[in-house]
Figure 1 (cartoon, rainbow, N blue to C red):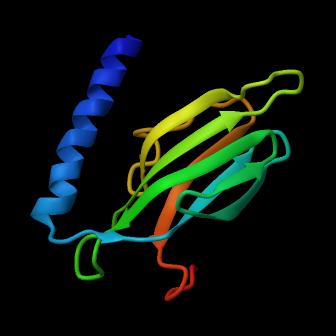
Figure 2: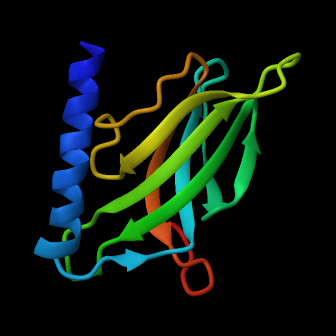
Figure 3: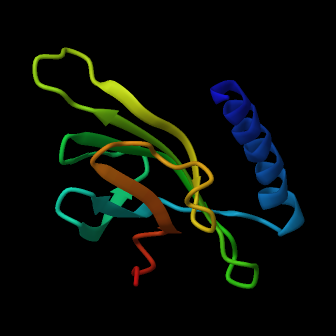
Length: 134
């Protein structure tokens, strides 16, 4: 079942990449991802800004956004980010990889991070030097 899910996600990413770049015009590469997060224990929900290629500590997680793309304003809204997340545990030299892949703002459940305490999802991709987030 897990292998089938991986094949489905890879196929979807390949199709989406072509659809994102070709069918709707030029994608906009941005330098900052705005992520939503949920702490399932405390029920806290908030946002987190992460610059591309920056590593941010969030609770016991470390998050890195490798790329973030948005569609032009005249196109249907979509934000796509490649994210890596690691779990930092005391006593371990190397962190465990929790998530590594593309997240889509229009379909957060499509490529969701599975973690017992935290949920993280992409809200938008912005150019932090020119735009402000909601």
